[in-house]
Image (cartoon, rainbow, N blue to C red; front, side):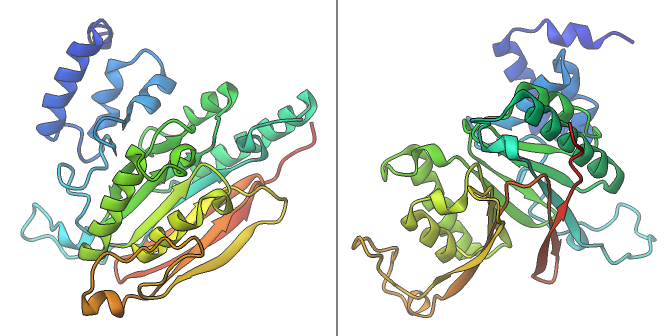
Length: 312
């Protein structure tokens, strides 16, 4: 009816205030953000970008408490007391990969056209299979690639990182961390402090936890990789500096020290002494989809789907 234009005329301060009230009132929960939140923006790309909130390190509609996403589907119940209980299906999300997400250095215009066609095929597959969320992480997301991300169905959240943000999201009882690799070399950085807090919370609450980075996971400092493994991260997913896809494990043994003498030990408790874990690492620069399927029974698995990339 054209009324959305009234919301787009709000100043940034006014928009933040109105969105804060709507969010706390749970107007953005249960998928309603696609109907309401979108009306604050003139373009679909701006709408997708605005769903990441750097100040609170979260994502509109997929927060732990306000949106009740910390609850598994089976724990949410039904408003109808006579409804037949249905066993929930596993939750499927997908991470997009493409050669252009590696930065595009040395890529010819012909190759870029080919990569873009492959990207469009990925989007078409996503719209057909309808995962619960889409994740795209890279140092830079080219403008043309942003344009096609906006063609993903409104009902599918697009969680992104273009090398400028980091945040947490929750979906059907499991947690995801979107990581920015740019400042992990500094132990005093804001993100490193935030990550250590997230890892401590994970060790206490023990949710199913997955991490997604904007680089080849091998580019992350060893101390970061070990902290993720110790924090009970089940899998770290990213890109790959080589043509060969990554698939390996990082093991953490209780109270181990790294080669640089730094320790990831935090207490002297018996739980720390028994604290061993394994993190699975995946990465690819191929055009395709990294599928992640999470079941409520603490089971999960991942598989990579290569998507055709037509000749330019």
